[in-house]
Image 1 (spheres, rainbow, N blue to C red):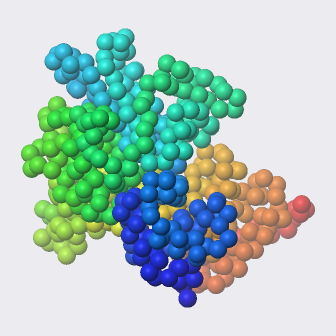
Image 2: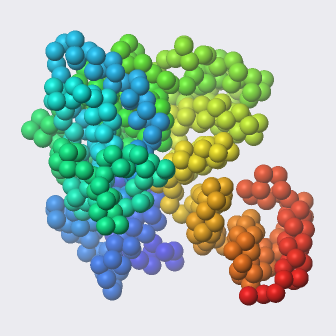
Image 3: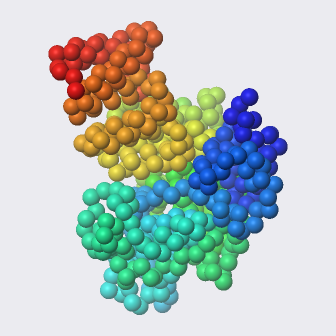
Length: 522
């Protein structure tokens, strides 16, 4: 009997999957059913449920009215966000989208803007947009009508957004000047200053079932919609419908921004977009064959997929070097999953993946990241494929000592696969690189909890514990590491080891154990 069968009957599970999809849009069919049950279990624990199978059956066959949906919502919404998340995308808006739009509105005598942060969570994204627009408008701000809308399904998140109190976790980098300008200290928290706190309209909205467009709530003629890290949980059919409903809310020259991991969802829905920093942008006419408006410049990467369909590269490096220059950019229009190179049986998405891995291995980070972005724009990628792409992107940024960008991509990876030992492993390496050993140890512990036989994690844990003077715990970690290594051939390569063999690491372990023996234990 598997875990699902122990908790509920196949019929109950089927009904739960169906109702979550119907009312929340999220797709937990197939292998994802285990994740659905995990979420219900966590919610049941919070509600002190004593008989889980009976409770699950009650949820399955209850009338899912507004009150019940709200009670279940915390299990299906992610509260992980922070200020200036996807900073590259915000910079793209500041440098490429808003300036021509503002100029056009000035010349037309139409000084108004409407922005919508859909799935705003606790408000960091909406406030980030407001701060950015105030900075761009400067002294002429009073002459503009600026409407910032922010919606979410989770009423608790909306209450926190309205309160506008934030802890240290909402600030991910050294942003003291930013924090001093826009926030005021409130005990151990920071609160958005009054001149910005009352200028965002927060309200509840269900992207899966709520009406769109909805002029009565301001959800029409919108210049910019940010809807990131939501549709990745929807079924392809529900995501396609929601995308078109969102696009119908835009002005003629408006944009909808999705996260990088949702680019393939748009492609699969038959929508043609382009890269806006690290986000994927769709215009109101994205479903049409015509190119995007000329007044919306793009910094999209060269289209490697187009090149791959023309010829099979002699090497990964050659394919990158001969990609079209940024000056010849065009919208991404292809379905990478279906397209194949005429000289290769491999679909383009598989070639892009190989290209990214080889470029990364060769230290060509820009080329690797370019290939990964276009890989993510391929239709039909599974959650695991997107997860591994995010991990490789995070590693690429980490290798360049770009911690903020690496952490952003690690968070994307964890959104796709919360129980990823590899993501926590990379997070530990990043913390160690930044000189934060305690954070590294916490991440290693999470990685080992998820994967107890993770050999390199035990080894690095031993080294960090020794650095902190915890010799007894360090020795124990080394002993576990050595025992695991002895179960493998010496020539076998270690996962995450970058070419390190089991025999090489075993010799390092024995050397450290000998060194430890010469030191008094704690």
